[in-house]
Length: 93
Image 1 (cartoon, rainbow, N blue to C red):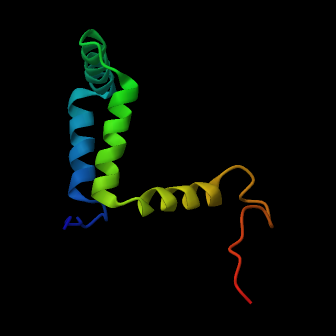
Image 2: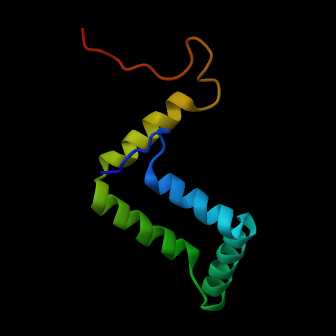
C-alpha cells in the first residue's frame, strides 16, 4: 500500500520526480533509445514481442480486462463528450 505524504502525492510519484530532477528528461530519452536499439540489433520481432506481452497480460488479468479497456475507450473516444453519443447498454424489458 502506498503511503501518502502531507501534500497528497504518493512515494512512487515523488521518487520518479526526484530521479527526473536528478538526471533530467534527456536521461530517460537516452535509455529508451538504447533499449530500442538493443532490441533492434538483436533482431527483435516486434509482432512476436507484442503477442507475448498480450498473452502475459491476459494470464495476469483475464480476458475481461480487454473488454473493460474497450468500454473505457468507447466512452472516452471521439465524440463521447457530445450528448447522445456512444453506445448504450440495452436492457431486457
